[in-house]
Amino acid sequence: METITSRDNAKIKYACAVRDSEKQRAADGVFFAEGPKLILELCKSCTPAAVYTTEAALARTPALAALQSVTTLVAPHVAEKLAGTKSSQGVFALLQTPAPPTHLLHSARRLLALEGVQDPGNVGTLLRSAAAFGFDGVLLGPGCAAPFAPKTLRASMGAAGRLPVLVVSDLPAALTALRGRGVTCLAAALYHSRPLDEVGTDFPGGVCLVIGSEGQGLTDAAVAACDAAVRIPMTDLVESLNAGVAGSVLLWQFRGV
Image 1 (cartoon, one colour):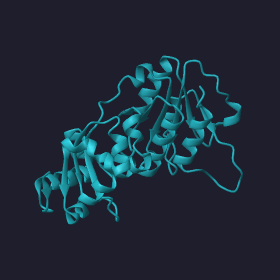
Image 2 (spheres, rainbow, N blue to C red):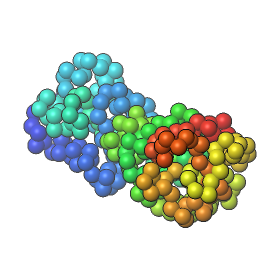
Image 3 (cartoon, helix red, strand yellow):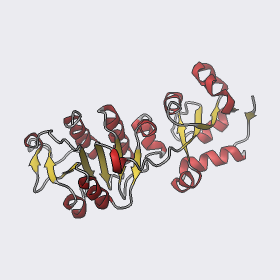
Image 4 (spheres, one colour):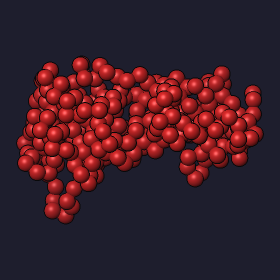
C-alpha cells in the first residue's frame, strides 16, 4: 500500500482544501470527514472516494480494511496536517456528497426547516435529532451552516449522510409549496405564538417544523409563510433555548405525526 510521507503531496493539499472550503466541496461534490467511527458510519450511505490513515490507526480499527481499495497510508506528521482537531485520530476520508433530495418538497410528510442557524454545532445537533425521531428530511434555508462541513458532521455524528438534506434559496417559497399539498408548517417563535401543549399533534397531511437562530429568530417572511407560530412553555429563569435544544424538543413532540 502506498505511503505518503510529504505534507506537500498534491493529494494531501487537495484533501485540506476540501476540508476548509465550502466552495471546493460544492464544486467537486465531495466532503471531508475525520475519525474512524464517523467515517465508517458515513460509508454506510455515502461512497468513499479516498481514505488516508496512519498504520497505527489502521491497526486500531480493523474494520477499515473493508475500505482498502481506496485507502492510502500516511505518515504521522502528514496526519497532523490533515487533522481538523487538536488530537488527530489518524483516519481521514473524502466522500461523495449525496445528490440533492428534491423529492422532499413533493412527498415528505415530516420535515425540519432551518433558517439562519449559523452555528455548525446547532445544525449538526438538529440533523442528529431529526434522524433520531424519524423525520423524513431537513430543509436548510439561507444563512445556515453547511451540512457537510467538518464541524457540522462531527456534531451530527454522520446524520447528514443518512438523512436527506436539501438546501433551498427561498425558504418562504418552499414552505408555501409544502402548505399547498397539505403539510402544516409551524414556526418556532416567542411572540404571537401558541404554547406547544395547546397545538396538538393531529396533522394528517404532515408537519414541517421551522426553526431560526437563537439570536435573530425567524424572518417575518418565514413566519408569515407558516400556518401558525408555537413556543415551548418555560419558566422565567431563562429567556430562550438555543436552536439545537429548542428544535430537538419540537422534533420529539411531533415524532409521532
